[in-house]
Figure 1 (cartoon, helix red, strand yellow):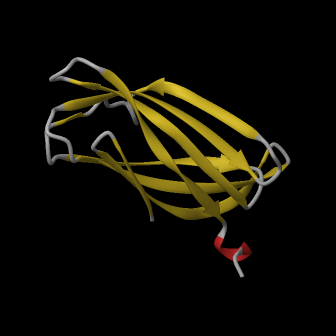
Figure 2 (figure 1 turned 120 degrees about the vertical axis):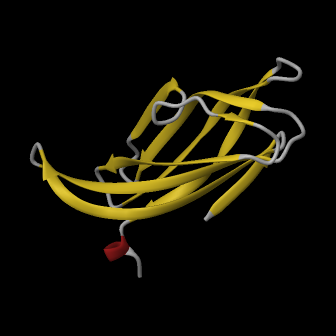
Length: 128
């Protein structure tokens, strides 16, 4: 598990290898990740957008930018958390993800970014 706190918002990420398969004559490696977003600040906040960089061991980089997370824009009061699970495909058995969430503080109306700590993706068969 990796964790990081930015502006009172704690991000925790756990990953798992889901398996591999062929798609369009290429080997694909499927990874899942579960993210918990915990509001440790004194203000209510809302996550409204995400920005991911997905890197594989072959130096391929995929950027994913979009609204919310898995179709939701969670509002978190102080002490609340939101957990979701998603996944990605890589063309190598190793990689990493990093990025940030765009959030708004409802008390100050200030928009801010919360860093998603870099986390590694590793196929279990490739770990020694």
